[in-house]
Amino acid sequence: MNHGVDTLLVVMLLSCFLLLGASRLAAAVRLTAVQGFMIGLLPLAIEGGELPLRVAILAALIAALKAGVFPWLLMRTVRAARTTHEDRPLIGYGLSMLSGVAAVGAAFWLDARLSFSQDSGATLVVPVAFSVMATGLFLMVGRRTAICQVLGYLTLENGIYIFGLALVSGIPMLIELGVLMDMFVAVFVMGIAIYRISREFDHIDAAQLTSLKG
Image (cartoon, rainbow, N blue to C red; front, side, top):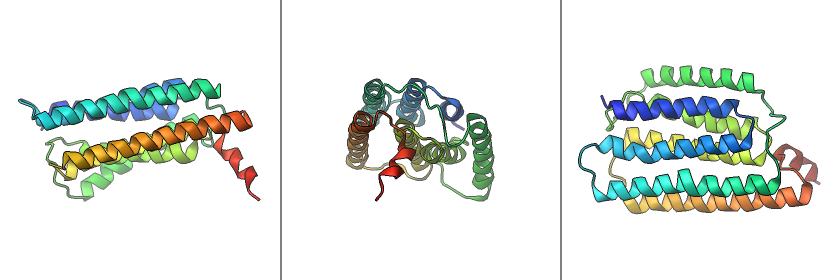
């Protein structure tokens, strides 16, 4: 059992609960940055001992993008949009936390009935991956502001990455770098779109965009 990996996964799980209960956008962005840093440490914890150069480079790039560049871009967008809180979530924060607890329970139940090859040696990879993905999906559909929906997208991708650790080892670095570049472009474009929405409509409430139909 890899206790280092399990420790990082527990931190990831706790950050998901904090995200579900966060009303301040800046705090939610910082929590996503913490998740990104944990994701960057996961390859190092899995390898242990002497680190191949490929793993070290990948971990550094993941941490730099997910814990540095993405949060910086989103914080700039938050300041430009002059919106500090998620005031009227589609699903309240108390119910969001309860949904998070239910998602964790369902993830462990599902993990007990599925068989995966876990190269990391950790026991929490699959249930935490399912829980993080569920958190990302919940943020995307349960929050009104576009910033929170972008954070949900990043959280969902974190869960997919963790799930990949349970199934595959030795993914070519070129593919991993390509995924990171796609994420960078997506977050960059989303940030520009949110800024333009805030300039045109003085809000970033994605739920009100339905009024533009027709």
